[in-house]
Length: 294
Figure: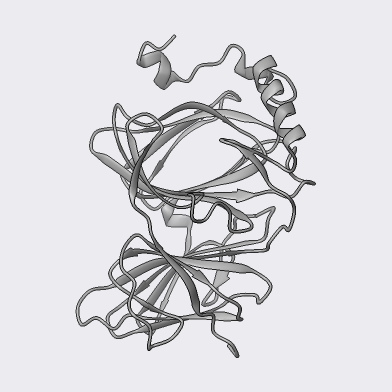
């Protein structure tokens, strides 16, 4: 690295309610940071049954769900159904339209992260699709006190099998006490870090440490340096980066397009069960049926 990226902004993601009874810590997609191209939302969620995220639509972007604890069952109007458990990842392309539910599977608290990655205008109306990777199949490597799980992209000689329509890097680092992580990031990409556990010093050894639930926006450069200066506690953080799309963004909740006219068309499509939402007319998730929701 010739020019390590420095922290240009730092946010503490505070809890808020989302879905039905769920709690999320939203760091991207809130009033201070509406959009960090190409990233629309980053939520750290915590949910226990019967709370969750019942039947809802999406269009125009991708969702990445990475489980930290517990499990979530996903089902959609195409008949796709599955459960992602701790350490698993689901990369869902909503494309032209999907209606699905995401509900906790079993007792106890389920925790994870959901990232929304925008799609370019050329990809917003592609067919929906899924890539689901079990924890045991996620590329992982360890060296010099640093372990990285590669959700997307590549790091320390390990490469993810996930294919991303918007070029994206998604890395889960664990840094042992007194160790340091160094990761190249293409200079033209936008990048941020999100701290899950412990405290880390990002960008420069002179900076103050950042603790759990902090999002750090990283400035220009060709890589990231992170130190764990504690004597006993590991540091765990996500490093996420992507190619800026550079197109206008029009958003109405779970619909993300390029213009307000396209948003109006999307709402009309959803209400008329047309242009990708046809199967929503007669579909209801098993979770909603079990709850007796009409």
